[in-house]
Length: 328
Ligand SMILES: NC(=O)c1ccc[n+]([C@@H]2O[C@H](COP(=O)([O-])OP(=O)(O)OC[C@H]3O[C@@H](n4cnc5c(N)ncnc54)[C@H](O)[C@@H]3O)[C@@H](O)[C@H]2O)c1
Image: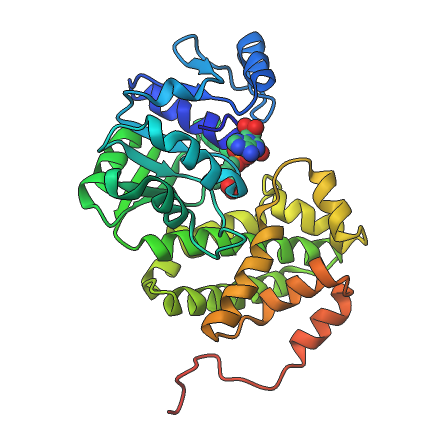
């Protein structure tokens, strides 16, 4: 459900694995382009085999054993709500979007659960995975996380092949928060690149960024080890260092002086880190954890603060111990 870059790349993995796959587009126009060109403009050079069914009719989920939700995070709840009456009990729902719900601060699987109730097991599939690279069949590893072990392992089996490796996990909160929050750090990495800063700055940003992501994640019930895994440091590496990352590209524009709103519009596709900066900040305040980099990102993105002065403020915060429990 969602024929953007990611929904399409994952549909191709499932098709390659011999499954009966239908790719649903949000609009008829989007579906018509796919039917006509047998290529997704978001995944140039990757052709869509005839075996991949294309539709914009959401009743396609009737009778499906597994439904993958691949819309932008802001549309996940509405999509789940629209599908709920069409789903058979036991249908496994797979959330592959990355974000935190804006108004509720819920993770996306939590929002889906509110819409479909207990009837359907829910899995988060996440990790360091650019659609462009999965579409080109480049080896990739991700995590299938669910409280329901058999659902996590079912999704693992459905997607796994010689170029797409899937690990299973029961730490759904840890997996989802790592995925959502790294987009904020990737945006900041782009800002630093746009300002002409170097590898030292980016290494510091990524490492301290991961520290604060894990701090919030653990406070929310995630396991610390998850943040050292594929959906934590793995996804952080991939998004902070690649030009495939629209969050990083958006940051680069901001670092070069483009106002934040305009930069988001110029990217032309959803920049999840922009929204995640506001939700992560709200969550951090709610649970009482310190997230100085996320706060700095918020100040630049929403309050029009100059990145240069924000970086000076970050660098001159009161001195700290690297490990919070040093000498206690
Ligand atoms: N692109 C990637 O490499 C990648 C990798 C992993 C995870 N993700 C996550 O997957 C999600 C989708 O990303 P994408 O890259 O495919 O985005 P995209 O912008 O390429 O496509 C999103 C799709 O959702 C549809 N859509 C837009 N508004 C909608 C609405 N209101 N209701 C239902 N559908 C709507 C669009 O028409 C489009 O088909 C994001 O949360 C992203 O963070 C992306």
